[in-house]
Image (tube, rainbow, N blue to C red):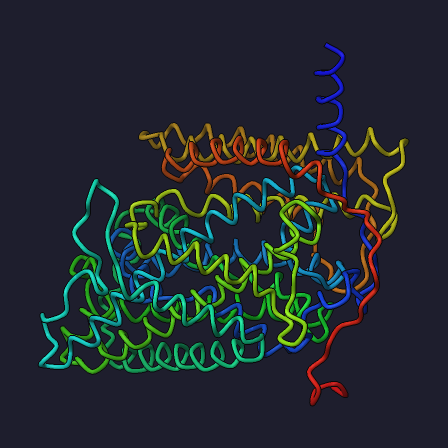
Amino acid sequence: MSRSSSVWTQFWTSALRAKPLSNSSDVVRVNSGESLVRRLGPFDLVLLGIGASIGAGIFVVTGTVARDAGPGVTISFALAGASCVLNALCYAELASRFPAVVGGAYLYAYTSFNELTAFLVFTQMMLDYHIGAASIARSLASYIINILELIPFLKNSIPNWVGHGSKEMLGFISINLLAPVLLVLLTLILCRGVGESSVVNTIMTTTKIVIVLVVIIVGAFEVDDSNWSPFAPNGIKSMLTGATVAFFAYVGFDAVANSAEESKRPQRDLPIGIIGSLLICIALYIGVCLVITGMVPFKFLGEDAPLADAFKSRGLRFVSVLISVGAVAGLTTTLLVGLYVQSRLYLGLGRDGLLPRIFARVHPTRHTPIQSQLWVGFIACVLAGLLNVHLLSHVLSVGSLAGYSVVAACVITLRWKASIGSQISSTSMPRRREGIVCITVIACCGFTAGILFRCVVSPFAYIFLIIPIIIAILATTALRLRQEQIVPSGFSCPWVPFVPALCIFVNIFLFAQLHYEAWVRFIVLSIAAIGLYAFYGQYHANPTVEREVVTYHKAPEEDAL
């Protein structure tokens, strides 16, 4: 009995420890040779965020949502964009407040809450990244084959197993040869160094933006404003439901936070990269929405390629070719940034001991985590080459919503501390517990409101949505009145705790809109992560380990900037 009690005590002692927060942005406490190269400026970071957020979905998701919401799809994307801006404000504060090291949401949770919460955030987000990368690789392979088949002698002569995927075996096995080849090429580019991968991302993202602008400008001359009436043919609920779908089209801006250790001036540039990239994405999405609903009545939009079909109906076939090229560029940048972010997260956990130390190794001359990068590429190649991962698309986005919610909660909890790097005293623990209870209540209210919104069929029943909203407002007010808050230096999220609380409420509301299998995946993966932590992580992690101080490596020609 005493032995089991001792094991239980040790587990909770380890699980509840937190990572000390240093206020130094000039050094990183890592072993010699393990630092990355600081090369990315604000322009690079903005393009990184755009590259992660806008893929082929801008040409497809906009039309898909418009089929239900009608011209009101513009409002759907505006509402979703506004929600993401609130999340971006939270990310921007933490990015400017934390030391410039890799980790993103994982690092913020490790410092604000505890080790186990941080590990759970990592596992949930990483599964999204792994499945998402494989799915994007297969889509990219399919688009490339479609472009190649525009050549007359190649049309209908390329076997499906090369790029589109072979016929399924056992319900989920589907061979795809081209997807792993593309992943290997991108992995090699990332292993070469952040400079090379940044150049590729800049070229492809610029190409993508130019094509989207051409599509918007050309489409604007084909708009018939009578197609915008009625603006919301299926009512307000269709626009709100569309906003829940559109929200996931913006997911990716948080990738900028994981490039902190490779940013030249992270405290200044990361907020610019996070918010700037998101605002540009919102403008592009709204522009495409206005064009697609103005060119064709929403009832006649195609299902698989709505934007391309809209231009074909107007005799502008060359634009549909541009859309295919833009989709290839978009998917390439999304995949490149996704692989990049995954390797940096593995690097962070390897340094902290929650994963084997091999993931913490950085090449002495390339200054890239090659072992982590190769591991990420290997996982993606296996998934993309052998499995029809599109079947798992409905269980994605759970990790992103969990990460966004935790980041918003981190903004609230870190404001309770007297100063950056200070430890919470025993006298402040009761108030901290009160705050965590309030945050939990807000999250529960968001989930309850989401379930009510999803399930009710009678308009009168929507009155019950007021109850969880009022309770969430009261909990947020209690946070504001009961907690002493310190406004940090650098970028500061406005109206704390109201903005972070709204983020938590909306994110969990969206969580409730996901397929029930996504909820099962969340629970099962959390249990598996706790088991992995119990058997490995708690015995090897050491968040307070003192390591040799190593300064950043700067880009030689940019040192004076």
